[in-house]
Image (tube, rainbow, N blue to C red; front, side, top):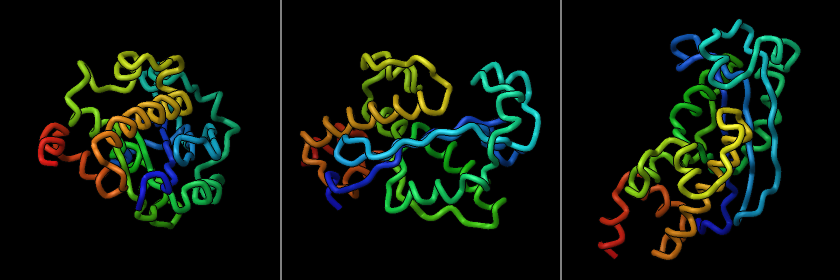
Length: 197
């Protein structure tokens, strides 16, 4: 599929822990759906994880137990999430983290996360070999992207979205025009692929 025709759903989650296997839950989710660099829809909400958050976690994202006390549950927003993700490619920074949490939340709702294609801006950053550090805030700083609000879901989503389109612009100059080609660039050093053309 041509990249110009693909709907990308850039997303980020904030959580109560480091892994769903360790009992972590999503306490905030944000999405920005775009096509061809034009944002079509945005969505962000706090979520009540149904459990208290540890002070160490609160210190990272600043989301308190009081802030989520009256927030919807993941099950409440699941229909909206499915509607937004319909026919999309998921884009996230360190996507395995977010996707694993989504799979867990879907499972607790008695569902399977649909097999959306995934593009990981962390993998693209690593394979590009361009950045001193590959975390979201450092990449944003190197590219002159505003990192205000780092570690809140919508701020991280918008940073990842801008980083993603930065990569798309570079890769398109090297003939990457399809989703299949883009996905390959997550797992191969860019210079190897570019030299092989």
